[in-house]
Structure formats: C-alpha cells, structure tokens
Image (cartoon, rainbow, N blue to C red; front, side):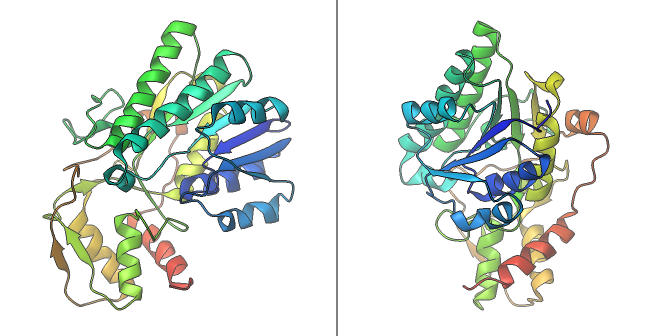
Length: 320
C-alpha cells in the first residue's frame, strides 16, 4: 500500500500513541488525514506538530462508538485506510468496567462491518499486550493464550476474537498490532495515568515516587515514536494483512528497576515509597519480538534510558 493519494482515518488520533502515529502518517503524502477523537483523554494540542506539517489535517470530535456517525464519515470522506486506536484507559476499568469492555468491541465491530461492506480497503486494529494477562511463557509470542485480567483487557481480547471471526467467516484480512507498554512525550499524566508519567510528575512536584506492589512485576517498554514508525511501516505492506504482531522491545524490566532509572534521569536520591498492588495487575510481561524483527529487518529502537531521558525532558518543559 502506498500512502500517497490515500485518505486515512485514525480513531483515537488525538491521544498518546494516536497523535504520534498521525505525525508519521502526514509525512507519507496521503490525499487526506482525518482524526476522530472524543477527547476523553486525548487533547487537540497533541496534533500541533502534525498540523504544522500538514495544515489540511481534519479533526472530528466524535465518539467512535457511534457506528452510524463513524461510518457516515468514512463514506462521505471516501476513507481508504483506518487505524483504530480508540479506547479508554486500563484504569477506567475500575470506574466503569462494562463501558471499558464494550468500547473496544463496539468500535472494532463498526469498523469490521465497514471493511466487510467494502467501505474501506484496509483496517489496522490496535490490540494490547494486556489481552495476554500474566505471561505463561517468556517471551510472549503472538500465539500466547488470551487471558485478560481486567475488563479493559477483556475488551481488547474480545475485539481480537471478533477480528479473527470476521477473517474466518468473510475472508477479510486485518493487520492486528499488539503493543506492549508504550511511554514517551504526550502520555497522559492526569486521570488514569501510567507508571512513568505518574512518577515523573511526582518528582517534578518534589514528591517521592511510589512503587505499587512488590516492584518485581515486569514490563516490556517501547518508546512511542518507535511504535508509530513501526505501525506505518507494517501497514504499508499489503502482504502482512491478516497477521498479528507484537510491538515490543523484547527486553524485560522490573517496575522497581524502572523507578530507579527514572530517579537517576531526574537526579533524585530520596526514598521510594511502597503502596499496595494495583487490582488486576499482571505479574510479568515480555514480548517475543521475533516476528516483528523478521519483517521489520533490524529496526533500531530507543533504549529504555534514552527514551526516559527524552520523556523526562518533555515533562520537565510542561507546566504542572
């Protein structure tokens, strides 16, 4: 697939990962780029760089769970390709578990119908490593069982199964991407924030960082700009449709080690507090990135230390 001349839609495109993907896509010379976001956690200011590079960027404040409105937009704008990143944060699972589940499956269902009815030509569906639950084997391949711990993760797993059913029943081909723990500039630091923005915000406020649980739980962190670049590269290859890829570094790091690294970047030498474990937390995550490396051909990823330095510099330059 050549991006030149195509009309692209990114759902959740004003969010953390979505806005970085938009930054990449506008540089690929598409015919048009549209962003749908209800601004639940996304921010229009996240699109500032993309608009500077591509003034014709179209932003539609819309809830992607509204299927008729979403598909009408697709038809009216003659969208060719959809990247579906619209979701609600994992932490939202604890406030409204049913909605956290349904938002993932509803949007996937609307877009799969759009693909089935030939309203669009290509769908790139964002899943999540959370759909796997705690690692049963390490590293975790794309064939790892789906055993979600939270309603958010169950919704992601449900959407994955829906994609698989449409592929089997209707012969469709969807590119499914399963990102592991993304971090970097623009990550939400307010409600439902992740461990890196929470910790950096505390340090900037002069507060001690906090480890939830033992700190021995592990994650596979990938810098958000790497995720955006890889997504655009994989989606450009028609022969990869119908496949699922982990987007991860293949490097396992404990939360306690992560906080030590953040403290080192910030020059903090004080105490680190302890707090109870988060409900539904997974104990271990590490991507098997061999399939990704096999098709992406030795793509250089940010090291965790370099990525944390760039992330710290971004948060430090923002008002608290």
